[in-house]
Length: 178
Image (cartoon, rainbow, N blue to C red):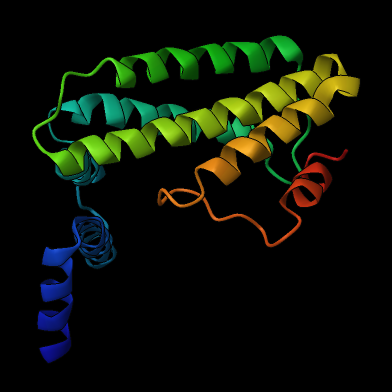
């Protein structure tokens, strides 16, 4: 009980940590009651994290779930046709435009979270661009990977990305089979 109170005190000071704690509580709720309404848990998470832009954020997460696992670079999956990858990229780009055009949010924290959501979309779009390049023009995929790594390095301290050690470029080239 003392530990839970301490976590709550920390969480109140750091809203990102607070949101992680709330998400963990919701996941715990789901573990205790598998018949819970998952959509309402997702809605509550998005409302808490993104404020008035919650519906757009929910659409982004749904699109990322469907896009990354099918057209993205997931180990042991086959490279999809360039046209299929281009369509997925187009969907994510449209959602990125929607997120970036949201009205100023209810709070500074909601705006910061929306900014991180944009970074997540940018990364997914880079991944799809690399996949598309690998599918249609493999020789130029190296340049796309280098662009993506520069983007990740420039944004690594914004609370979204963790880069793999000192040789990020080498690791990503290996990950993409280059």
